[in-house]
Amino acid sequence: MKPRISMITLGVRHLAASVRFYEAGLGFPRMESPPEVAFFTLNGSWLALYDRHALAEDAAVSPEGTGFEGFTLSHNVASEAEVETIMRQALGAGATLAKAAQKTDWGGYAGYFKDPDGHLWEIAHNPHFWVGPRDEDAP
Amino acid sequence: MKPRISMITLGVRHLAASVRFYEAGLGFPRMESPPEVAFFTLNGSWLALYDRHALAEDAAVSPEGTGFEGFTLSHNVASEAEVETIMRQALGAGATLAKAAQKTDWGGYAGYFKDPDGHLWEIAHNPHFWVGPRDEDAP
Image 1 (cartoon, rainbow over the protein chains, first blue to last red):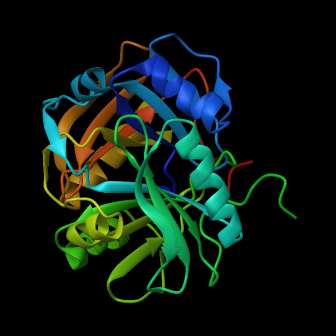
Image 2: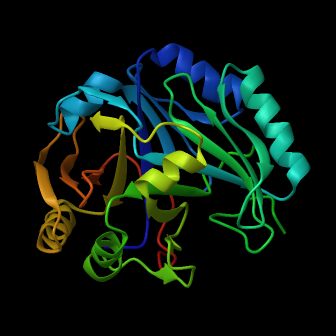
C-alpha cells in the first residue's frame, strides 16, 4: 500500500449547508461534481462531503452512531496569531467552539472547533516541525 | 484558511497494536515521536494515532461514542487488480472486511475494510479522474 490517504469523506446531514460552510465559510476549492456529493481539491488529501446515511450504506455498515467519532482533522499554521484568525473565521462561518485556542502541553498552540455535523477540527501551530503538505504557494 | 488538511488523527484503544497494523501491516512510514503518539508521514495529509480517550480529552469533548463514526478514509489506486491486492494485504494484516471489492454505481471499483478500531478505509479505483495526492514516485 502506498503511503497516502487520497480522500477523507465526512458524512453530513444537510449537504447544502455543509458545502456552504466549507466552500464559502472556509474558502475550500470545490470541484464540479454530481449534486449528491461535494469534492474539495485540497493540497494533500482531498475532502469529500456525502450524505451520512448514504456513506454508511456505501460502506455496508449501519448508519447508527452517536457521540465521539474517534477522529480529528488538523490544520496546521505558521503562528499563534494565525490559529486565532482561523478559529474566528470558522466560528463566524457557523462552526461551534469545542476548545478555545491555548498553549498545549507539547509546546504548541491549538484550538478545536466542530463543523455543522460535529466533526472536530484542530487548528494548530507546531513550533517544532511542519506537519503534512505544504501550501502550493510556499517557498 | 488554506486548502489543506495537515493531519488526520485516529483515536485508538491499543496504540501498539494499531502501530503494528499501519507500520508493519500496511507499510506506512513512521516518524520518530514520543511513545504516546505515532505519526505517519504520508504523501499529502499525515496520519496520527493517539489514545482514544486522550484524543477526546485534548478536544475537550466526551470520549463516549458508539456506532458509525461518520467518516471514511479513501486510498485510490490505478487498477481493479490493485484494489484486490491491497484489500488482501489489509485483511492479512488484521483488518476486518466491511464490503468486498466490487463494481460501484459510479463506474469504479471499490471495497471497504475496518482497521483494528473499526475506522473505515475504502480502497478504490476511479477510472474517471485521479483523487488526491500523487505518489512521490509518480511520473
